Length: 78
Image (cartoon, rainbow, N blue to C red; front, side, top):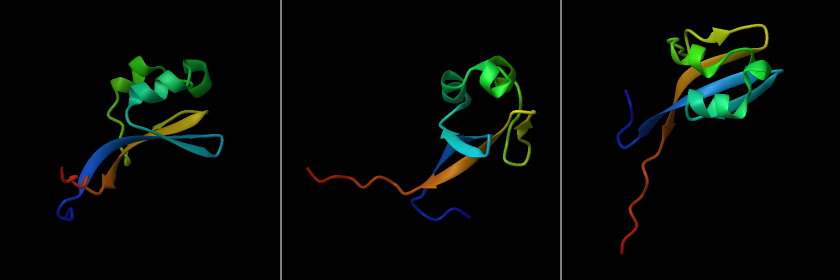
């Protein structure tokens, strides 16, 4: 159950060479990493149903989709 007022946002997690990187979507990830660097293209990735339980894996990296929970923005009185 999600606590009241919390917001969920999608996140894409890239694990490569023991390092972890986080992106807001697959396009942002593939804009930052070339096909040669991660061993897969955006076109291929966008057609997969990647999730935390079903990551994409190859000999170079692991890519997962998940959810990050954030607090709501506080309204500023004007």
